[in-house]
Length: 130
Image 1 (tube, helix red, strand yellow):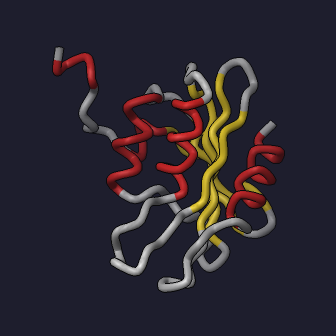
Image 2: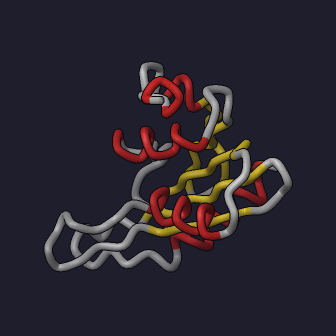
């Protein structure tokens, strides 16, 4: 099922607004029930005050009712195997489990699969703050 998530991330990347960095990024999240939420990075003139593709996808995910995220795909047209930045790793960790699959893509498809636990082994977890 990862190829359709790659395609969703690629379609989202095509909608990126990145006039300053010229570095469009797309992300797609799949929930346990099969719903897919996408996002693209959005830059503003007060660069770097914008938001990442993963953050946009998470916003759609929350507004769409949430659920358990089981897969994530990230793509950047100018960089193979683009990973989420540190901030997005923590944002994703809020809604994922360490075993959630993260597909790193290039323009042809998924080139590597890792887990969120591998990407952020010591991330903060909400349950420790309660």
